[in-house]
Length: 121
Image (cartoon, rainbow, N blue to C red; front, side, top):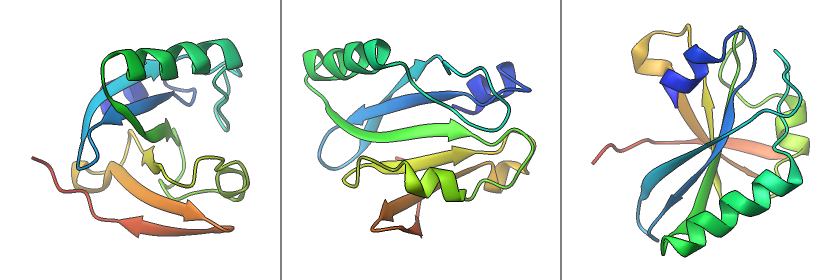
């Protein structure tokens, strides 16, 4: 995710995450249809195709990620308003942040965001 975020500067990158009920195991990069430095959108056709690919691989849709190329990796008001998958984790990448804080993850539900702990395995 971090490599993709750096490669797509100055624009936001985005993608989906798949895995088992207990962990996220696979990254599925997608295109940012908006080609924007301040927002992202996965085109419906690509979203459906990627969700289908996740399912075909025997995985569950576990998360969504995108980058904030120049800002803090904390959910923006728009990120919170458009968090349509409450069962998923929302990863936000800051390609210019120190490695220890370059990737953060949040649970976004009912108009609020709570940071989750990332436990690499």
